[in-house]
Length: 265
Image (tube, rainbow, N blue to C red; front, side, top):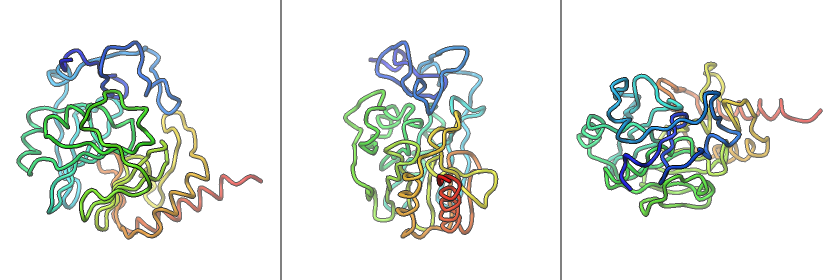
């Protein structure tokens, strides 16, 4: 099926393999269908939208942010992660234009794509085909794949090494397959570990728009998985969403605070 016939949800940015009346991502309690109802676009229409343009900016050492201006759908930006052994696209956005393609190819193309959770799957298959790069998703979130493709590789367990210096860790926050990426002293978290305005803490939520807190057992497990890692900086899902120092201690302190507030009296 051609790109111009595969629908993309305007609220979350997810592309589906064929036209459908609803978006399962948005009817789930972690997202929402807007009061105006379900609305669709397509990959080609999105690329041609004169109201949108690419936003490409350095976000940190070896990290380039890629998104749209103004925001589309949820509004997250992806991160191009440069490593000596190949580049990784962390998370994804629905918008992919020639300008973005040229920028990524000028930096060496893509070795792989890894995505934190289903809200950011968007047009991942279009990106995979464009750059001939496999997509790595945790198997616990397989049910949320809107457009199946042979380029999608499901992994299991808690850890997956993508490159010698890059590891995916399944924390299970927000979604059962909720994943973060660890590289050197940096943790890329999407909104699995959410960077909040008070940079002295992070947040853990089951649903952000609907304000449903994450289950305490899930937060406890996530903190335990992150405790042995060494990282000083966190980059979240949004532009300039980062904690630049002391990130490991902040995550552990935040988890302890969360668990203290969620204990039964």
